[in-house]
Length: 61
Image (cartoon, rainbow, N blue to C red; front, side):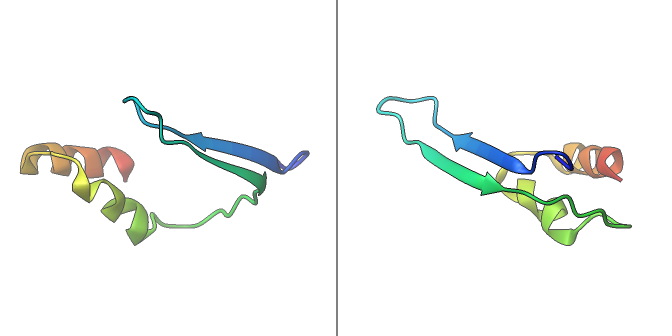
């Protein structure tokens, strides 16, 4: 990405009719020292047991 920051992202569903979101533009890498809280909250809608959640967070950290 440092050589070519142009990106394209497609988000789709696995059901019919398709619902597609296309995003094109440029991206920038942002290195951080910690794991952003937003990243840890992102999978909160996934169905995980408390044990699975603890395991997932441990792997991320």
